[in-house]
Length: 198
Image: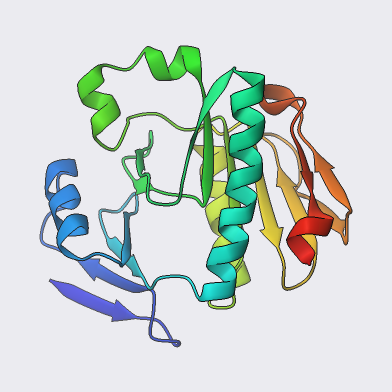
C-alpha cells in the first residue's frame, strides 16, 4: 500500500496492490466512520475529513431544499453526501446532493440499490467548504459530467458563486446570484441562495 498526503493533510490517497471491490470498500467505509471515502477511476482510495460545522450546515440546507422540491415534484429520488455511486469509469464517488429519476432508479435491482448503485445521478450538487480546494472540486465536477451527469452545480458559499456544468458546454459561472433555476431533468427546481448565503 502507498499513501499520498496533500499539502493540507487531507485528502489522503491510498494506493493498494489491487483496487478494493465494492464490497470491501463498503466494509472499509463502515469501519472508518466518520471519514468520507471514495475510490477514483485508478482504484485509489480518497479519504476526506468530515466537513466543518458551518460547511455541514450549508450542505444540509441545500440538500433539504432539493429534497423538498423532489417530494413535491415526484419525478425522482434525492441522496445525501454519504451515498456512493459506482460510475461508468469504475470509480465510486459521492457528491453533497444527488438526484436520480425514478425510472432509472427503479430499473436497478434491489441488490444494486443497496450497494454503491451502478448509476450516475442525472443531477448533482457539490457545496464548497472551507477545507475544499477549488481546483479539486472543479475537476470533480468535470468527472461527474464525463460519467453521465446531465447537470452539476458547484455552490461556493466562500465566493457567493454557483458554477453550472453541462455536457458539451463550458462551465457557466454565476456571481452572487439570488437564485439558480433548474433545467433539463430538474426543470422546476429553484435554489434560493439568499437562504444559503445568510
